[in-house]
Amino acid sequence: MDPEPPSAVDVSRPSVARMYDFYLGGKHNYPSDRDAVAAVIDAYPKTIDIIVEARHFLRRTVRYMCFQGIDQFIDMGSGLPSADNTHQVAQRVNPNARVVYVDIDEVAVSFGRQMLSGDPTTAFIQGSVLELEPILNHPETRKLIDFSKPVGVLMMGLLHFFSVDTDQAILKDLRDNLAPGSLLSFSHTVSNFLTEEEIRQILDAYARTPTPLIIRDMSVVEQIMKGYTVIEPGLVLMHKWHMDIAEEGEPEAPQTSIMVGVVLRT
Image (tube, rainbow, N blue to C red; front, top):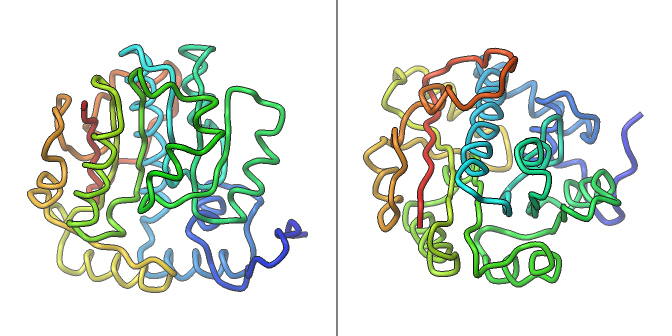
């Protein structure tokens, strides 16, 4: 049986957050989300491999940030909590790590709060990366995050839904509000390693969702990163980013040539 959605939420329309929940084996999704996932996989069968690979990349970047002394995180566009969330990964390195999850989807936020209830080291707030001020000044954020100290910010699979100008504005706004030494990680779909047919398939897959995707050349993504210090090895395919940081015993991740990832320092 599907979970009871929050009142006034239309679950007849698919949500990217709930679709990701279904991709990762979660239970907080609805027929519209599952139908959308089926359509995406039908158009591009490697989709689940991409999602799983992206989760592995997220875990490695969180561990890297912890090893650099970061103990407070904001996970933008986080989706629903699933296996091995940001706070769980971080707290295996530093038990005192704190995480604020942010998503625009009301259902994701409602269920996220239920799932994290009673954990004083986490918060789940509703917000859009297009409006950073309400996120950064939210009472729950201010309770957990000390902006006079470095913060780790995660934007996984988020920036490729917006224009280049919008992405640049988001990253500049973040840079202006974060302490020196803060770290930002993001992943982004790129065209460099894909055939024209693969690009067509991916675009067709996401055209079936509420959030069409923008696939860019890596050189364009690099323009978005201006103003930050790029951490080695730079902007690379996700499976080429610091596999040496993976946890011991972690299952091998799928390796696709679709999304790149990077960590930046303010």
